[in-house]
Length: 171
Image 1 (cartoon, rainbow, N blue to C red):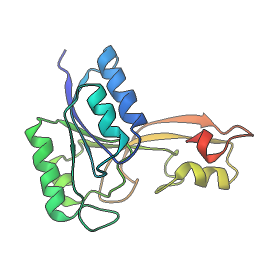
Image 2 (tube, rainbow, N blue to C red; image 1 turned 90 degrees about the vertical axis):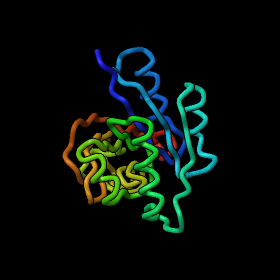
Image 3 (cartoon, one colour; image 1 turned 90 degrees about the horizontal axis):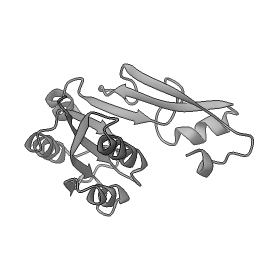
Image 4 (cartoon, helix red, strand yellow; image 1 turned 120 degrees about the horizontal axis):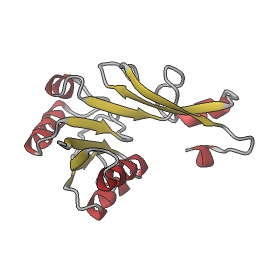
């Protein structure tokens, strides 16, 4: 069976990246991570990639806080293409992608979002769910489009919010 070539983008600790890499290593996920890229120089996700012997790179994002500079986004497209990536996974990547990426990988970019979309799009969704008094939250995997946390939903899983949960335990 052909293994799907993945590119994983992340800005943080890399827990979703670790789960993907472990699933690929065990054969549960018929995929191979070709590259892990972060917009944060010292992001733990890069160390996780090294732990799994996956090529990894830092991509300087530029001056914008919530998106990549156009030059950086074009460089990201080049890096992913050079690695032979077929599917891009946003695993805690905290930048909005624009036309260069969306056009280079149409319906081949997936996002992992920590809520049951359409509820609580955007940042820190688990905190939003706690503040709203929700009893259930969850995770959504969806296609990335031009809007934040908006594309077609692929899968969702519920997670109960326990009475003693805090933002730290829920996240």
